[in-house]
Image (cartoon, rainbow, N blue to C red; front, side, top):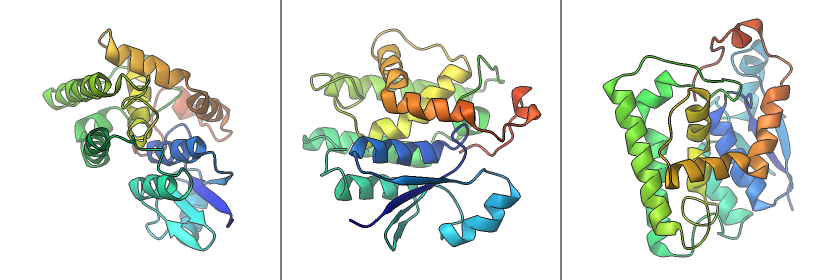
Length: 226
């Protein structure tokens, strides 16, 4: 089999990298990682040789290159996971793809106000009607998904899917910024996701990154959201 390499950004900040990495880890395929620290001269110097879009993540499978996060996750599902990253049920697959498409292109207020930061603890940001609407919509989507997929298991659609990978950074945001979670399906889902072995592995990596700067520890963002 051709070698598999995933190029990612900082684990602490790079939500798109987390999504692709989770799907690859859950697929069971053996792969290597190459990490480029965001917003650094190294990133600017090297990214052009690794990614046609000059963004992370980017997946290399031998000579084949896939550079959009959703395209990467779908490629992983088809190539390494035997289709298991989507439910067998057509209705659940359709729901999951709708959720992922919405996450891929929407929730702009949430992205802008609450950049992913694994090391954040109980940060507070000014609220707005748009931010509150994004949060409420995510809660509604998660509740709907759990209602329809609960018979299969504890993930959004029962078993782990690309939808869980896409919403994983949102769960991290809610924890870091002290967003109160409704009891029941939403809180239970977030607890399950955060306790997952692969999520814990990524979080340990975020805590161990060696290029942490003092500004970050003081509570300032040092990398662009998403």
